[in-house]
Length: 466
Image (cartoon, rainbow, N blue to C red; front, side):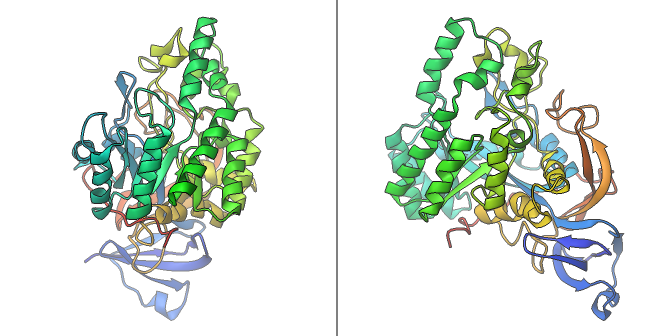
């Protein structure tokens, strides 16, 4: 069994920072010992990685990705292979992707289709959430079976009528089922019925540019849906996790619910923290690159999101990585913003963007690791196997250079998409070396991984609810 020692770095977890060496054997972390102590000096290893002057952090857990997702007559541009390779480059060693139940079909059929897409193709480890598009007696029964086999979270949509939409009665039934089986309901909280009216009216009035995508998806309709989802969960006695929170009023709804002691959680994404409606309004249809749902908001919403992350009103930063190329995919919506495929690339950039927030004093180093690694692992039943550096944990470890400087660009990124949402953004900090279950997949900025190394990882129920 090969042994690796990571020597000389500052180990940063959600709870601690310590100058320690890390011993890895058989794909797991075996021990930590302070630099220079007899314990650390006594270790022998087949490989020693020098992390002097760098951070040693847990691999990132991105709890919201959409590889190969069908949407609006096309598919997300990243496959499980290209997407997980890009994740590794960005220091993310576990993704949780979304399997989709089609309307009129069994939940199991959708899950099996996603197992087949990912099997043998992933560079890093992966799990699945389940999108419920058709809540009925049969699919409610299947929820119990999925929880028992490690698919413990279910996403419902208050948006996209005719595609993923569930009405309040269906949502309540799914929440009641989750309350009984320990599953976690994830909610896309936007009032899709009202949004569709506003879309129709905007297009009829000739407002067809990408910026109107943001204009019709009103802050009030995200806040209203967030409030309604919270009250339905309260009635059902179930926990609730609201995905891609983008608006200050939605954060306020989550904060009020948490103040009452309700098991309500929120996620935001880098695009809402760093981008805004200014991007959606870029000329020559460039704004289409930034079309996602929930939409980008005016800049003043960013501070509420950062504050929510500092105050733990928001617990997780995921990417909602759902990339569509500008050429040939985003362009499907020229002349009609409602036909622009919704989604943005980001799985490679999350850890670096959040480190930039550390550099700028918005969050602490430990909070960086908490919102990007530990909290998503706990939220979705992967902790402490994932999300920390401790004896017994999987050796998903990133050597991070906090002093390296980089400029984000589509020219140099590894996502299978022809633009970067953060083109030209200068950052301090960069991934140097990445281990996935003890195997080096990025070695001093060289890719050494392989498709098929990544393993499917079943999950326990949310560890925030134990």
